[in-house]
Image (cartoon, rainbow over all chains, first blue to last red; front, side, top):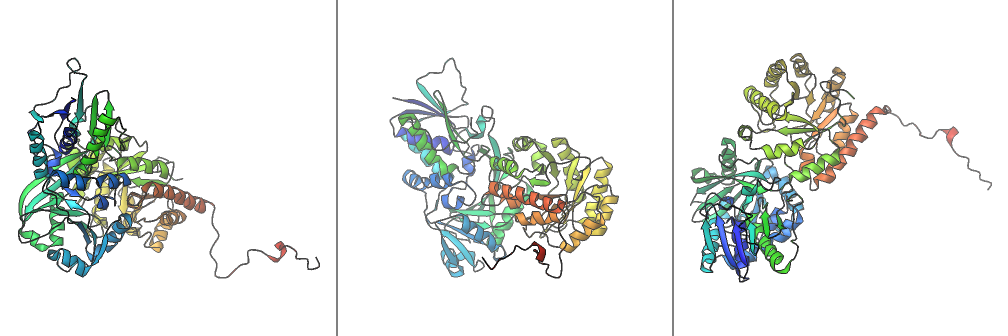
Length: 333
Length: 260
């Protein structure tokens, strides 16, 4: 039986564990933090499974691999909602909508009534919208917990300690899978952090049933419903490793954009402010690498929940079929 | 080519470093565009802890001259603080000075701009002021110590091209010796060609490349556009005329021999 140690239990680590446990392996997951928790950047994710929307600003391989995420998560956790995503822009910014439309596929074009019908709480101010009906969303924290509990039930051991690699005691029969994200920065010099800031607010007067993206030339925003009047507003993208403080400007802009979508958001309670840095290679494409018995999975950038299922599959194929992963950042070595 | 504070740049294209899909695409865009200067905006939050370091080291590796930018500063004080930080991080006296006066058009606050230019020039900075095509303001900036001017084509990120050709021509001919860069508003390569044809010394752009579907291809397009405009200007073009002039005079016409 394969002995596997997974280091790091963010979304990458847990998805890899889930994929490998079905192959009758013996898995230990090691994390210095008690997870799921705010130390891992998966905790602050939007949880949108929106591969086609991502096509607006990313490479085709992300769109293709991201499509695996919807069936994977639907099979493995209970809280996936497949209700599509809706893209809107204020009338002054309708050109942004045109650009988005040109660069993506698999959507329906909605006129004013169509937008209102899908999400009545958007009011009548959006003359046009794009509806990506096959997309889905989930609650990241619930999903991480569900996965972890399921893994424990299946015999995976979780160890709460910092992993120290010791060449002398390293058992060559064991496979180590490094899923630590930015924590492996010392070994992987090309990794950098891309700071993201997000808010969790409570606004029971508004009832959105799917993620809504507001296009704006300066401050694009998305709102993801978490149920029971809770919404996640996100997220900024700043070239910085800082994972501690939100700037006043970011906070202001996120709230302003939400207010533009519906002024009732002005009455919302701010429940949480989240800041973290996304582990990214210079091409913002993730990578799986193997050196002897150590496999590294990293650089998921803003696509953790979207790509972790495909990456987990590739890790499994690499171990059991010796198959080269389809996605390797040029910069990961 | 005119020198910018004593420095001769290899190609008259200055390219911004924001909004690219990824740093690796940014690097390819610099290679394809043959830009010789990179502008970099600093956010004050990321400078204090040196946390933006990874991105900056990518920029430093581009191997082009760096022009730090006080983008998004609304007051003289902010702009000056940012300029100080930039000098520390990138070890350069060059600073592209932006003092924004109006949130919607991101129009420069020319009063604040002149004030900040004076302070920074006195401190030894080499200031590239982002200004309008206004002649009076230009004069005051030069008096404040600026030796380069950066008039806008149109508002930042608008992609509208050169909005006031008359004003830009007037500015150019008023200060024929001053190196001038058309900064902001460039949307498509022909806008850059036009700027070079008008006799400007360089063009600075960012969004037009970064937000294209294929930024690398657009970067290449701009390299040709800039080259085309500067060669076109250098070749001393003909004067437009009110009347047609046949391009083949009678004497040059080939004989048509009907007998054969």
